[in-house]
Length: 333
Ligand SMILES: NC(=O)c1ccc[n+]([C@@H]2O[C@H](COP(=O)([O-])OP(=O)(O)OC[C@H]3O[C@@H](n4cnc5c(N)ncnc54)[C@H](O)[C@@H]3O)[C@@H](O)[C@H]2O)c1
Image (cartoon, rainbow, N blue to C red; front, side, top):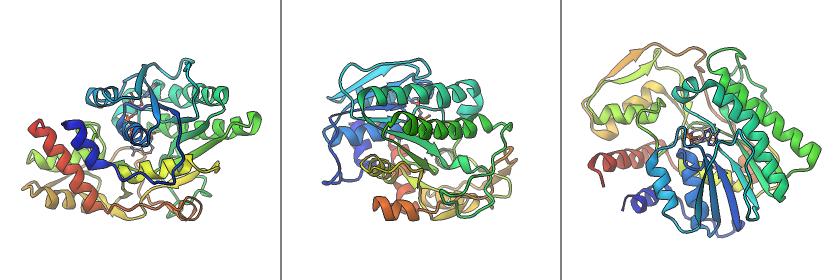
């Protein structure tokens, strides 16, 4: 039952005009965004091989996926070369620790996944003549000096700060993807995802939305870093999935920003979660992490114009769906 409800909460109807892939490989497919991508591809009739070393995956995602016909889990670390026997026409490279708590715990693995893992995923796409999409991130913009951030902005990243293991791995992965397309003609594209949230996030993964929801449901103070005036742009996962698949179906190389331009301060986000959960929790200000960006907001002119994509789910709506999912998990249904 959980799988059914879970999918119904998160997935938008498939676009009838979307290309039909026969077989997609999704690296990191057992993770938060990857598992939603796998589910949407399976809904569209695509067979999916999910390649994941399960270093940050929740066991429930894996069980939900492997229980579906057409879905195979290949437990492998993409930093080592891997192969898939059956022909592949789409590779979505989503493997990487993504939450600060995870990449600070796994710094070398994060760097190797962005570099060696991207090299190996690109080699698989080249071998099969498949379309390749790299999941890059708004973190390539660092603590931005331009606002909002368009794809033309080169970023302001500290190359040796604690977050550099993630930011620089993704910047290298972007450079590798572009070079691979130039040198070998691989049909490769890059999406820069902004903060995505929704059902199946881990309550303790350290990202703001699951942390606030977990704290609000437990009646604990919501821990907002700094003075709470720093902003984020939050994209509901179904919108992110639609954007990634629109990019896959295009011939664009990108990079293309996929994110919701509705910007919200962390303090307002905490208050919104308190209101939507009906919690009696308050807010507690705590220290801000090193190199935490002050602002984050995508310019999505390119995605709107070239992919006819834009986010549809508002923050109150997406948060309500996410809260409902966290509540259902607490009840165990
Ligand atoms: N969620 C977001 O807000 C967001 C924003 C920008 C970019 N992204 C990108 O999207 C992707 C997925 O993010 P997520 O939020 O779902 O994170 P997640 O941690 O939930 O999922 C990542 C998955 O990759 C797997 N993985 C990590 N290293 C691996 C390796 N070497 N070999 C095989 N599998 C490996 C993990 O086990 C996990 O299942 C990441 O590449 C991330 O950088 C996410």
